Length: 314
Length: 276
Image (cartoon, rainbow over all chains, first blue to last red; front, top):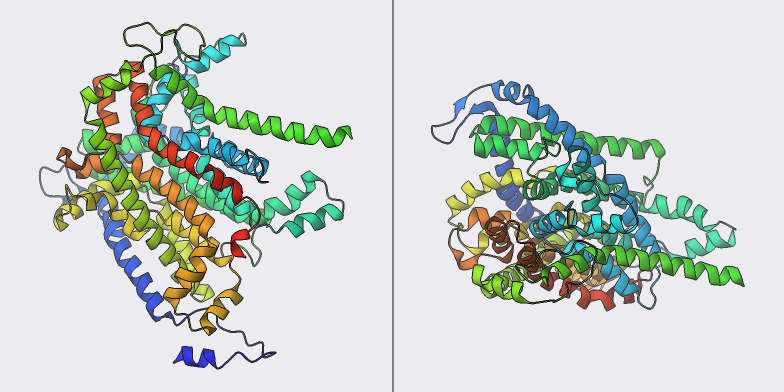
């Protein structure tokens, strides 16, 4: 019915706000399908994982209702607090460099030209290394005795630290390692930069705006929504990737300096079979990621950037 | 005059420095993988060992069936990527055609889903797959592709679709195109750069996935390269040459795919030519 009416509408000058949508019937089925899939593959597992926090469960006997005991057990654990601190440090340490680095690199390689395609590919190159392989490579690259990073530092007359063997340097080492992994953010920024119409930049140039002003007044605000999503994604990814990376590369060592929340959850759940406690810690992990993300949104709102009509969050 | 020469020179040296920085790990890994087994590692920075040898690579085959694992990784990654491109873009298109309020709710919902730590879902997914009889089948590996793999990919597509001027959809509709045709003939071609990006990210994701094969597969039939790599680490923890050869073997295909797309990266650098 609606389609027939829509066909009768194209009257010139009659600027009816033609509904942007299609006959939504079939599209709604797509969404319903997605919701069903997400319920099965994401929401149900999440409910199970998070629900276990209210039970005492060791996989041997049936789960028993335990109220908030697990939360008390998890949050009063000294290791839990340590893991929270380490997780925060490991997420926040590389985040600004990763997001800004991705943006600056995208800006640097924005204009197409000879060889630019190859350089863009080069930036993403380390991103193609599987995380498990990357952890192995990181152990080699930051090896204090024969790793290339310390060789490189030695070549310019510096004595490199022991990196993953030294509590003070293990976190910076992991943060540095994650800088090689920003190819994904780079690609996203590159795509977003292409959305800025060239005439906007040209107009700014005609008005006498310098490169820096153009970047600050036009590029940054237009890209802000993308950068938010990127930072958002980075938060979660670092929480998760830090698990693969940390469990393979450092295992929380040395002296618990890289002992992160996912590791706590894993140890409680699979080593100690205290699934209730593991689940309670998971609540903490989720809340932490959510709080960080909210903080991020708050900062953006404060600056009033990227919240125009064209914004992502419309 | 000098200023006009100075700027491109600065830009290009910055560009080359950036490119070099990101190639460094691969150069180092490659050099280490050529190190002959049993010879002490070099004590200073040298790009190549004195006597490069490919012996580490042949030793890989003795430890696990490299060829079959690589083949499994390949078709599972391709399947996962193909399904993801369809499902993520389909959902994103359906969302982009909703009223504003509904769209906002979906974006917020997807962002919340994005926050869920994937590793926390794995044990519960194991129970669900067991109930469905999906364990030890490739379905358990690519199931997330049915829902776009990650809400992130849906959001990328959604963003791309929202940038398409509404008039283009309107005229397509007036030409009698249904939602399916609008998606396939208008939205997807316009968002082609996003498809390349999502496809690449997704391929790398499935290629490097260690958790799913380790948890959901029990027989070696569909085992992937990433798992072989992990077994390598357990078996030869300090045999750096062998480990780095394994890393090289695992990154060869995704890196090759990336370099194959390199010319494309250059062509679509300008602003939205794809829209035209």
